[in-house]
Image (cartoon, rainbow over all chains, first blue to last red; front, side):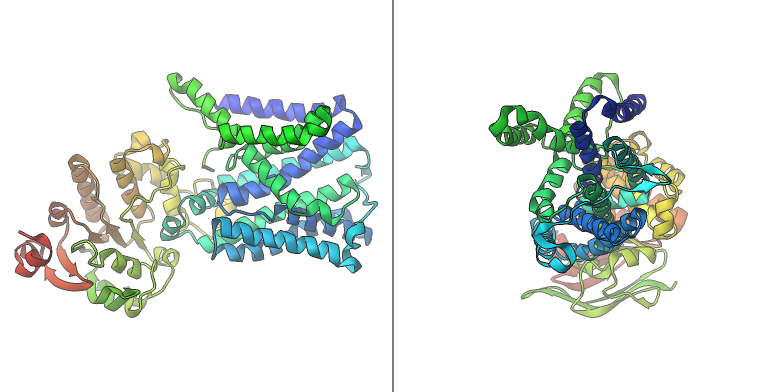
Length: 325
Length: 247
């Protein structure tokens, strides 16, 4: 099974590297969007899927990251600095947002984070002196590194894909470490975790801070990808979309966000051939998917593989070892 | 021998119901103290107050002479105090092996060193030894949720010992366990006690289990201690028979 998993990962990597050469600019834009939003979804999967903390604020963190990069680069700061600042700022704000999670859980926490998203949207819309209000920020330039410009769609895609690869590996490292086990413990049984010495307070705050930071870094790529941002892009819709990615892909599965983002970015475009009905069809497909595989696409695949391997002995697991659930 | 745990005049009420009413006792290093009593006598509330899950309304808890009243359970755990719960409390989605590593990992280095260090926090071999000790080796790779009730009870107990605690509080470890598994569990606890000289406090209804395992027994009724002594004396105590044993 490890071989099958390794082969799948290698094939997916080769596909991700090769596919833009067969696509038109809009197609490259879409897969770049996939790479960028996957980063935010990985962050939400960490907070929600692994640590079990419901958050409807991930879209707001993408917004904070996007505005941080847009404002700093337009003020003349280098992209790398702005990008790090986006992640750092969201880490700090995310950590603070984690405090309510120490007192409230589940749908109450969802409402707290939903209120935060609304608050961020209002700040982005109303504080014109800083954000240019409803007019948004235009002409966000794509960065150049040591003479390599990411201005072209293809180069920006590879830049996004590389960033996704680095951040994915960092997240994988964290989840395979004792932190990953502690996050799962936090989700499954915080009282027992506490009795085993797990400082649930610190791990809850870290789950929020790191997940939010990934949202901010995603926003840091989102701004130069679309080159125009306005507050409406980071309202509740974005948070719900990211939540959809995590749930559809498979909450708590490491590769869930990759698959979920693929569905959430590409499915609406594929259904566009139905013209005015595409959103209805997209919504219906998502509802059917949730009804028949509530554990997401990877949960469904795992079930199918387990059934297929049952006679063969060892059941396969799509979740990386040691990082549960 | 010195007292590892001292409980003095502990009180806890829920609304108008007094669950623990002025309970005081000491636990000496290396002993196995049993706490028995009818349902609702305040045994689990007493445990939860001692272990920081509940804040007592009054009284004091000391571990190794240090005041620990109101201390968080995770901080108590780092002082070498471990527990099991009345209801099963394993992590069903994690493997047996990972449950055990989780039970010990927070005692390994700092939070940062655990992030950059080994995935098993250096506890892989200790977890192997623990599954072997509790005779769960053949299940080490299985998800804890897939184990039988009795096996999960064993795992639950094994987790409590993973960090090498000096004081272990076991809340109804025999509850719902069949006779074969019960003997096995008692033998494991006795073997661990003999090897590590750890101190146990055991809440249990299963009298044979208590009598075979414990060196001293406290009897609780309506939030108060009504009797204390050696197991065979407790069995014959008319107050205990009247309030609890009923024969």
